[in-house]
Image 1 (cartoon, helix red, strand yellow):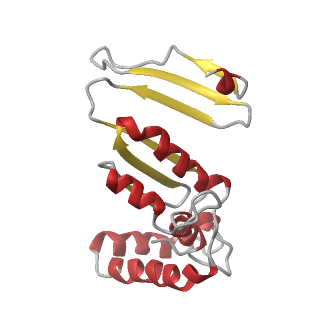
Image 2: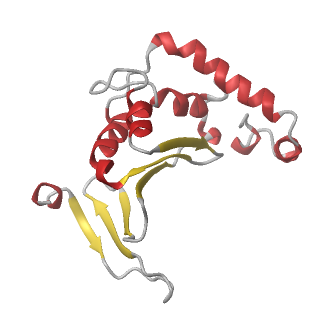
Length: 181
């Protein structure tokens, strides 16, 4: 913890919660400006983490629709420290874990859970996505196709059709009108 203390700018221990909520909370603001919420719940069987990044489809350059979603996919496919494309998923699967991610209009969220005794290993692999992803050229075409496949699947969903109708009625110069699936 001593190593971590010099990376923390502010600690927030007085977090407002329901009287029925028995979990313990702590907020941190790191020296790099990142805000973190730690939650401890002794009744759970797993540990989990999530990273929410304030970049979504509305941040895509006009000439590269789907870029945020594509990057979401690519981050899972190897890092400098863990170059094997399936290392992260394999580690989680071996330790009762699961992961996923989603890209929204303004945010991209990555999350996982894992058996609590393997949290440190999972966090190390997870953090590497945001420190030194590989973005392997060999995976590029496959992931472009994966994003395209998700879009084609969504074309048949009424929920996504209504969403696209909303986007089509937005001012075409506003980022909300951009591609997002």
